[in-house]
Length: 394
Ligand SMILES: *Cc1c(COP(=O)(O)O)cnc(C)c1O
Image 1 (tube, rainbow, N blue to C red):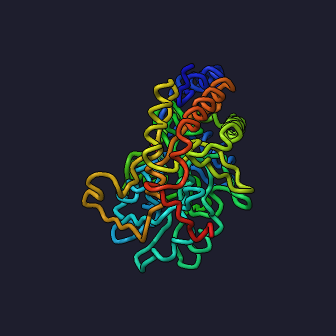
Image 2 (image 1 turned 90 degrees about the vertical axis):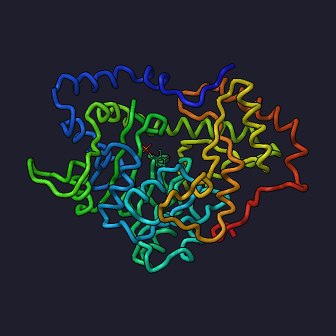
């Protein structure tokens, strides 16, 4: 059996008539850029998050640096994030001209460890960007307390967790802005690139609206700006898909629960940790092998057995060749947990349109491999993974 990593075409076929109807409506409207479909989708997205505003932009990376720039953050300013995220989180900080400061992740959630943030703050620090990695929210309550204490801005990189929430908070409610990406592989994705940010701050909303449209909110009148718009065609696709996002995320959660139950007792890797009270939306289902060598062997075995396993992300940002390419960057303290995550992560196929047979085939193959390598998973020399407890775990 072949198990793909993504189910884009299956998803299209499942709601084809709804997507096609919106696409046709846009095509026949004659209005393709900054038109009524974009406006409609922005309204729906703000309502979904319970925020005052939503602004469609060209992609998820732009959403982050437009938020930074809209908040007046740039050269000479430091922005704290963690290094085991998709590259774009740091890239956006550099595009804004600011300095990226990396602190370690929590070994359980893989999100930024709130207990390590304060030690990284300097007089230049202006913002924190927690990433809701793999679909689980960072601890926004703890992070917000730190931000308030030090008068820092807070931008949630929510490219991976639309529809997730914490025990007492919703995404977009404790921050200056939450940004997201709608590239096809995200939980809410269109057939190409686009992104958005949501905010309750009307001033930031107005600034980003102007920045994304050549610095203009009135014909022929411009200030400094860019072209970073979300096309109406994509807005139409996203509007059709937004109606299904909660059901799709529920389905992801069901497959995650099936993986977790099916892989219980394996000795060569740890399963993802879902914190109590959190709604994890499993953008990715990531297990972490006990040693780096086991990771590569497991991925090879799965690929040989026609299971499209991947790694997210096998090189931490500060470990990329040539880092930091002349950009301003700093690693604050040990980032051993982030490095262990990079060396040991394995993403199993995860999308709503998987079938029970596919999930069970993946479970069977992973178990078969685990049984053959169980001795290597236990203690002994060469146990390279640190799994260091962090302040939020201890
Ligand atoms: C996908 C992603 C982005 C960037 O989104 P693009 O739309 O590809 O620019 C940023 N941050 C994280 C964590 C992502 O997963």
